[in-house]
Length: 176
Image (cartoon, rainbow, N blue to C red; front, side, top):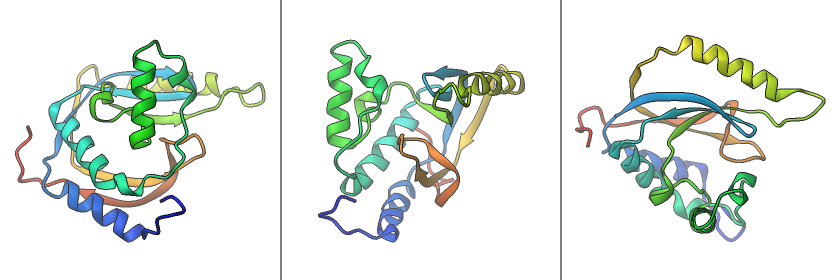
């Protein structure tokens, strides 16, 4: 939370649990893996169920958003009007990829800043090649859990081993 608001981690996690408790598990279909800048991602197929899940979590956690928001560098490289739309989403919700901007659902599997010292781009490219070899052409699963974790300075990417809590989606609810 920002310095004017004092919320406990427990109230934040409870807000998420309450938001997702009534939501169904969503079918997750992997489309592809890709390297985008310093990020390795697994793209998943957009569904109304994932949109509903995203919208519910954003609405439930909006009062906990930290200010000021950090704008990811890639947003500045977008063409107009998409850039302005993403900047507006960041200003309002602290994320460029929510509500109408939830247009490319994905799972971020790595953040590797590129530098001459660590050659992370080559490492993550090799990792993605390995993932591509291991993921079946058609890969579909049910997403039944929301996890909350600590993100690094780059934002958006949960740090390895930093899961704080998990909440199960409602297995008896019907997927939209």
